[in-house]
Image 1 (tube, rainbow, N blue to C red):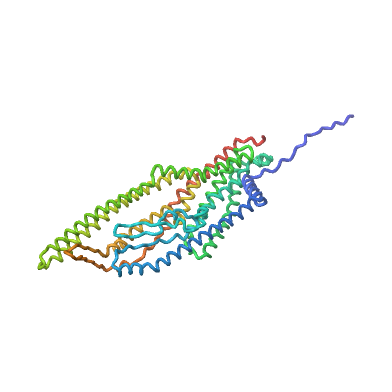
Image 2: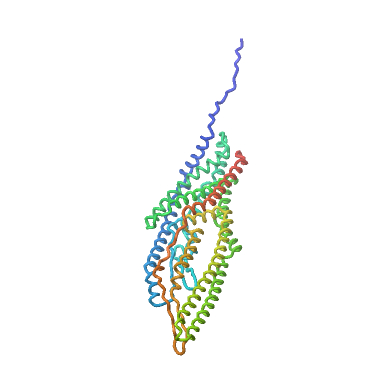
Length: 489
């Protein structure tokens, strides 16, 4: 009897199915471990600490010099005004503003915001800024934390992610990863999470060291909420570029192609687009408009002064030609002089206020155009928001100009107009009348005020939302390219 052997097909034991959540965590952890064991993270973190510390040291020295300059000026302010009083001169009151203690975050508009202004009889005159006070800035440009984050760390974010997908595709690990029950969108999110952790681990300690250097240099520790908001905004900005690097890595066939495309996009977003925005705004709303308004103000005030001089001359002629026995001739002259002076002040303030309003509208148009065009670049959005958080943006500049004008109206113009001198030829001698007003209550130097933190934090909500939209767009692009990728090729 023949024995029959039946061979049953061998059944391979299937690997246990891993839940998507554990796969997501495994991919993110793998991404973090790869960077921690590589040289990119170490080099990037060291450069981040070095650059942030250097920028904090440079800005802290500049702030210390500016504060010392203002302190010395305030010591001489009242004696200088009193000396003008003693010499019976027409008073010209010069003042300075304080520099933002958070300029270490972003220099912003400090170089173009006047540092001094003078109140004169002819009106308010803004002086020079502190644009070239620091020789390092004059030679190499302004180094601050917003420059480090906006320019250098954004390149670091791309350096971490430009081959995150393309290299795994080339080595075959991407096909193994996608063999697990996990969607390609989950892979993208896990990778961007892992790279975001690396970026935070590089930036946050560097920011903390920079703040310690700043405070150790004597800069007051103010605006804690602003610093925290800057940190969050910086992380969101860096996530945008990390997501952009992933999208390029999923679209490019090789890591070399991905590196070249990332470099091109980085140059476009960080350098090219913001400069194009500046050129476009200057073409649409030219800055020469401010010069035209200043010339119109000078012309209008000159006409008012001519009319005022004529009225005073008529009053003085009437005083000289009046009957010497007339007991009211001096009172009539004083009354006519006061009426002419009051009319001059009233008309001059009306003209200046009208031109100021026109200038404010022109500046508001420029600011609105800049904000509107800045939506094309995450770097432009980040720069504007950082400047506002540092009290060096448009909001603070507008506040300073408004405060300076209010000071001129309430204090500076009263000091400048506190004495009037009139002279006329009477036969062979000159007769002068000098009037002294009590100006001691107006001997108050100018003090800058800061935009409330609540207003600033609300103002950056819209740019932060746009940065989040950029990050979402880049993540969607990465998922789209990865979904159409043939991982077997």
